[in-house]
Length: 157
Image 1 (cartoon, rainbow, N blue to C red):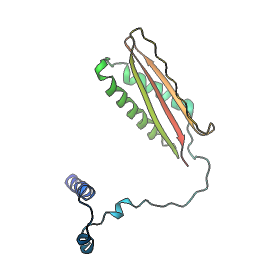
Image 2: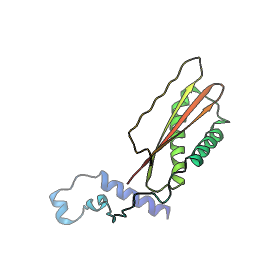
Image 3: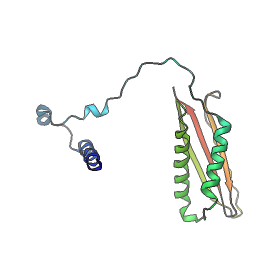
Image 4: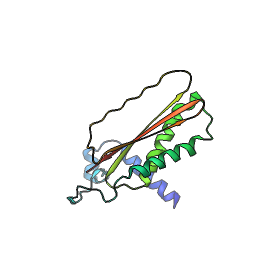
């Protein structure tokens, strides 16, 4: 089954990356890429509320627990800070997706820095609906580094 899936993915990639359609290929019906880009249309639900809204308290505790469990055993190396921030943001986003909040999109922003007698200030501003959208932030401090993680949750109609 793995070989079949690999073969079909190779076929799809070759069709996407292949040469553009020419009149001779259209006539022979050998090249049909338009069906891959058709977006399915759904009926409007006319709902303005989510069936599974975001619960801020639960998400804050989950986020704090996740950062502690991920970073308690971590040995900080400045050259790997970028990779750490990328991995943390991806994992946080996946954690929020697993909660399956209906009609919400999330953006995770993680900042990792040294603690070497410097000052750090971070400000974020957004224009959004205060009733449906939310931002959850959590920090983690170790003797040699700090992590500031923010997840922006935006309602998507």
